[in-house]
Amino acid sequence: MRRRRVLSLGLGVFGAALLVAAGTLWRIEVRHSAPFGFSKTIDFARLIAVRGGYVSPNYNNFDRLDLDLRAYAPEAVYDLTIHIRPAVPGAADIRTLRFSLPYARISHQKSTFGDPFLTVRFPAIADSAGRTYYVWVEPGIRNRDQVVALWSIKSYSHVRAWSVVAAFVDEAPKGRMGGAVRVALFLLLGALVISSGWCLSRLVAASMSAYGEPDQGMMWWHRHDTDGIQ
Image 1 (cartoon, helix red, strand yellow):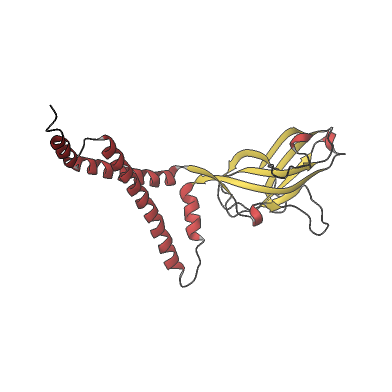
Image 2: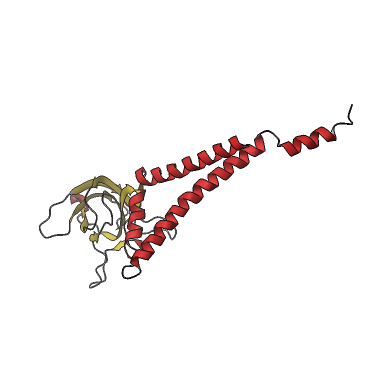
């Protein structure tokens, strides 16, 4: 029994440590903050969709765009160039992506529950956090007579899971209670790790009890219950 307890406790501690290590080392894909979850590109002054818009990454390693492109010529194949550049006057492209797409892939006729976005990946921009980038779409020469509009943009980064947690804590309310709120958040995170390890240890203990040797009470009952059997 003691051996079971020590083993289950050890596995629980190992599981908690593994959770902390995963949060520190494991990289996840995170969407950048924006109203409604994406950046609108509509020109509100003229009430039209345009071919460019701005994104402001929350994290470093900006490496993905989801573009809601709308094309209107069913017979066309679209040669498109995606330009990504810092949103400052005179800045040059830091990423330029070229590809061809059939009309069906970026048709303006989007289904109600379908995914309207085209995903584009590129080498990560390391120091992207807190900066703003201008993204615009340039049609090819054979598409100069076809309309292509960019309705909205979503942007993403690959970061360590701990960076997301740290950003969440950093966004806690400031002011007189800011420090107390941060302490409370760290305590909640610690409680999550400890409770995860405890749950794992209890699961291990329960499984070992189910498949291990019967306890002394069960052995006593079995011995006395079978005394009269020849």
